[in-house]
Amino acid sequence: NVHRGLHWLSETSTEKYENVRIKAANFLGAKSSNEIIYGYGATYLINMVANTWGLSNLKENDEIIISIADHHANIVPWQMVSQRTGAKIKAFNLNYNDEPDIDDLKSLVSDKTKIISVPHVSNVLGSIYPLKEISKIAKSVNSLFFVDGCQGAIHLPVNVTEIGCDFYVFSAHKLYSAGGAGILWAKESILNQMPPFLGGGDMIDNVDIDLSTYADPPYRFEAGTPPIAEIIALGEAISFVENIGMENIRIHEEELLKYFHKQLESIPDLKIYGKSENKSGVISFTMDNAHPHDIATILDQEGIAIRAGHHCAQPLMKYYNIPSTARASIGIYSSKKDADELVKGLNKVKKLLK
Ligand code: PLP
Image (tube, rainbow, N blue to C red):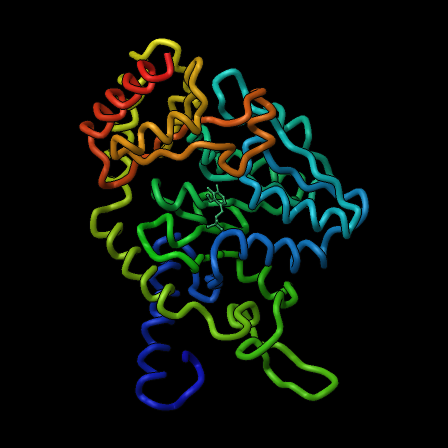
């Protein structure tokens, strides 16, 4: 275990585990590794912030603003907190180009706004949110600004200090690492004010039978045995992408995304959701007379793995009045050949489902 034994093995695992905190702080452009909180993934960490910062700061008639394209992981935890505090949730829409509608966001903010929470990149549309602009809007009403960086930190260079956000979260398994770990970055001044989430070993200062005092952040938020191997693996994944360079990853993926778009647009009756020029990572689409699940099943037989479904974004599906989409995702290892294979596979889908 980490932080426990005084023997060599525990000290070695502690050192490897704590070094990832420094690596993650540098990766995100954070000022201090004390601002890095480990958890089991983005969902866990968003729930943590909603339950700690949210429950101790939100009250009736306060407002939480999210967007219509949010993943359920950035909707449901805020809903649960709003049900317990009386705070209201509002969501801003998209513009004609499937991008976040910043004018709509501006029309929703007021001195009731206590937190704005948005994805860095939509996991369905790929649209990149203008985080610096949203940060300014949040600051103009003294609101905090939370970024769900699950689809951001894996595709784009991130600097939380430049963005001007208060929280940034992502999951390790989307950054080519193992499942079961995630990172929350939050400003030290905010973490210092937040009560703990879970109680147990390692998060305390002193324990008596009737009362305990808690450790300072980050340990206050890391009760019990953490995902040690998964965090150390995440450190390796950070080195892996940093060695390639996040700027280079962005250039590679941007070029590929354009190629995928061009190829997919050649298929009649195929509609792409996510028309923004400023997008990353994914291409969602539907095809006339082909259910996305059938598209995925037929493509699977061709050795092509895509996702089909509502992508944990039901409000967005309702916004477009569709039940689901098919979604191709690209990463470091994707190539133009993958786009060509996808088009071949989709033509086969058309033939089979004619
Ligand atoms: N937010 C976004 C934008 C996502 O894409 C995902 C996962 O798909 C999540 C949150 C939830 O991440 P996890 O399931 O790793 O907790």
